[in-house]
Length: 263
Length: 263
Image (cartoon, rainbow over all chains, first blue to last red; front, top):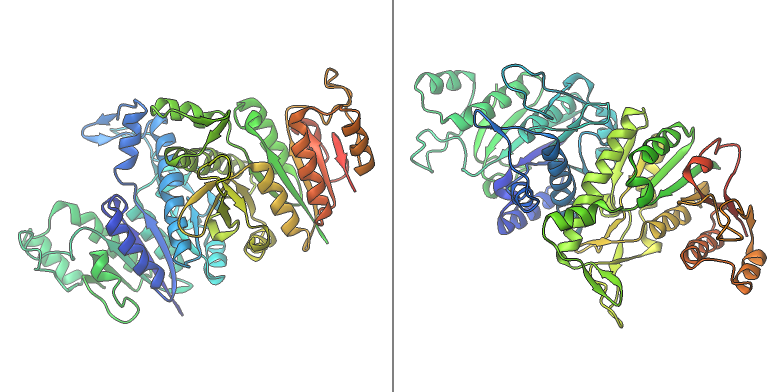
C-alpha cells in the first residue's frame, strides 16, 4: 500500500512564526502522500477580544456559543487555513484548505447536552467520512490541509478537536494507505520523567502503557493523546509518532524520532 | 460538451438571509455541473469596525492594507465561504469551499503600483489557472464555491473582484465545457430605462451594446459587467446572463431570463 502521513500541529506551532516556517518547509519536503491538520492557536482569542466578545466558560471549559463558532469558523477556517495554504503553495506543495464541511468529508453531530452544554462542538460520525473524495484529492497529488471544524449536515458548522480529526482521518484512510499518524507537540516526545526534557520514551506498546499508568508517570495532558493513538492503532493505523516537529519531520520517510506508539 | 454554469452572487444576496436561502435552494437544484463565486458583502466592514480597524481610502477607493487582507481572508474565505458550504451540504449539494490559493487554482499578481497603490489586490494570471484540478472536482460531482480571494504564489493572499474571478474561471473552462456565465445582481437585468425596473433588455449583442453606449442609456455600474461579459464571450464562453437570482435560476437548464449577452 502507498504511504500516507497524517500530521497534526497545534497552536504552539501555528502561533510561532519561526516554528511555523520551519515546520512548513519540512512538511513541504515530505515526498509522499500527506495531510495536515492544524489547531487553532491564540489568535482566535485575540481577535475575539478585539471584537469585544467575552469567552463563555462553564466549569473551566470554554463553551462554543454562536458568536464563538462564527469566530473560529473565520479564524481557523479562513485566516489560519488560507495562510497555511498560501505558504505551502509558495513551497511548491499543492495544498488545498478544507474544513469537515467541504465535500462533506467529516460529518459530525452536535455533542449531546449532558451535565454541560458545550455548544457548537462536533463529535465525528467516524463511519461516514467521505473517504472517496479525500482519496481523489490525495491520488491527484493534492495535499489536504484541515482546519479543526466539522458540520452537522444541516447547515451548522461545529468546532472539533484537531487531534480527534487527525485520528479519525488516519483510521478512515487506513484501508487504502499505509498510514502513519503524527502528533507534533511542544516536547520531544512522551517523557519518562516530566522534569527531564531528554527522558523521551522511544517506544510505547500496550504493556508499557499499562506500566506507565500504574507508576503514575504520565502527565494529564498526554493521556488523551496516547488514548487517541491506541484507538487509531486498534482501528488500522500502522503506527503513531508523538514529538516535536523539528525532530519528527527530519527524514520522516526513512527514520522515526520522538515516541513511537505501536500495538 | 457538458454544460457548466458559472454563477456569481454579490453582497446583496450574501447579506440578506432570506434572499440567500432562496438562492441556495435554486442553486442546489440545478442538475448540471456548476460553480458558485460569492462576493464579500457588508459583514467584513462590520467585523472590521468591531475590531477597531479604520478603512483606508485613497481617492474614494478602498485600499487593501495588511489588516484588510487578513480581515477579508477570514471573513470571505472563512465565515461566508464555510457558511455557504454548510448550507449547500444541507441541501444535498456537494459543495467544496475554495479560494484561488487552494490547489493553486487562481494564481495572481499583486496589482502594480501606478497612481494609486491598491495594496494587496490581485490581478489574475489568466493563462495559469489550474484547469485540471478544477475539472477533477467538477467531473467527480463536487461543486466548487469560491471566495473572492487569490494568491501571489509567494505566500501572500490577495483580494480579487468576484466578477473577474467568475469570468476568468468561465473562460478557462470553456475549452472543456459548454459554459454559461451568470451574474446575479439586484435588478432583473440590464435596463433600457434605469427609472423603469421592468424595461429589461432581453438580448445585448455587440451592435446593440454600441448603440446603448452611443445613446448613453447604461448606468456606470453596469458597464464593467457588460465589458466583462463580452471579454468572456470573445474568449470562448457561450453566453452570459445578467439579472436577478430569483428569475435567472428558475428553470435555468431549459430557459433564460434577465438579459442575455451573446456575440
